[in-house]
Length: 451
Image 1 (cartoon, one colour):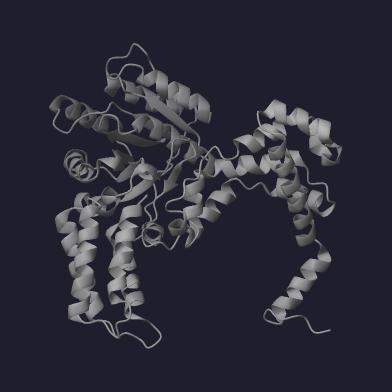
Image 2: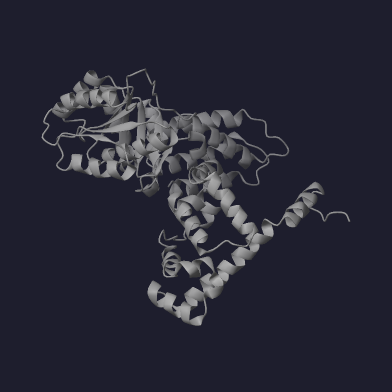
């Protein structure tokens, strides 16, 4: 995401490279490039102009310290303004949790924006991260198979669903869903509604009636980030009618411009609360303006990367794994399980892009999400005994594994060799003597420990 914008901004900052100080002349040239970059990213013209005027005002009022180069200072100012443009602070969901009364979230948006899928993703997030007991309410009586789609997704995320296939009145259906949640101790109801166009008065009246009937605590407007500037205009029209409390941007992983994310907060005066970053049910992140500004400016996003890793981290399993590594018992089954945890964290190129400096290096590199498939196939073609004891893997067994996995003997040999090297390295790292040596070296500021 934001690849084009990141490149354009980087080129803009190079104008100040080598300059001794920030002046009105050199900053004007830099801002001219920044304005073009924002417009190219499909940011609203008025928003881009206002953004550049604010940056100029702050840049000219700054005294450049001897240790700080003008280009670096400009990056800092632009970073802070980008974060402010997108909302400043992360916005939380408003879930009051009243006694015996479930919190209600109403999902609204255009046709094809991804409301139904996003409803299921949100239910999974609330269940796993917030320890809630959500209920999905299928209130899209307009689109054929919409209820069935939500039912399948509800089954996938293991969340209960309220639906009536023969229902015709979405307002009554939403009211009954809230009543059902109250009776079955569900503390959050996520109401999926039909997609609509802002120009369709009948459908807009319908969702307004649903809002009046169930009094939602949150009204989330789901918008496709790939629609660019049009998404911002539509969001404003919906907000004038519904006064929604938050925006959810979908398909941000496929949008290289990102203008909607930059401008929607300013134009619609409503915070972005979540972003969808992939097709999997786990691919939903809370929106953090400062972290997004980091990524736009090529600084990575280590905090989000660590958070994703923690979601897949099991402390008990980690302790068991550490004990096995210490005893040199780390086997192919453990290796396979680690691969599955990495895959659950999301798109590999996106994960790599969260590491500072790596995103730029991998700009033109295509990282296939199926990169692990051949490794998985090789491991799955091993018997339980072979996975547990790699020493059993002689030539005949390796030939059988290659045929069973659809690979060749060279690939099998390469994997086994890499596995052996990895196991030796892991054993070395967890060796108490090596750990003590590392601590001693740290105390001597990286030098060799004194004997």
